[in-house]
Image (cartoon, rainbow, N blue to C red):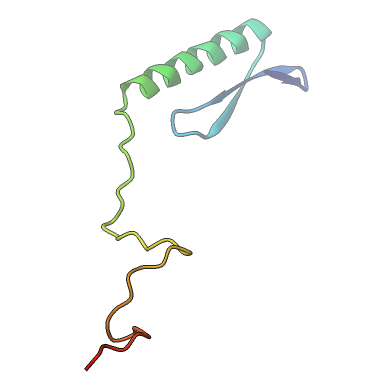
Length: 82
């Protein structure tokens, strides 16, 4: 809450995350309104569903560096006995 030019300002954050201010003639009225808006935001936040986990989008994992995989027969340095 802040005071400016003889007015008291109630400050709160709405359920959408935006900040709001409203001017009042008395400190008591500003404080009462600010508490009311905070209670409303908390009840709206409690009603919304829990966030779901992120999907992996089906991407496969890349092999780790430094761990050699089995060499393919084409790229093998060892020659087969004929």
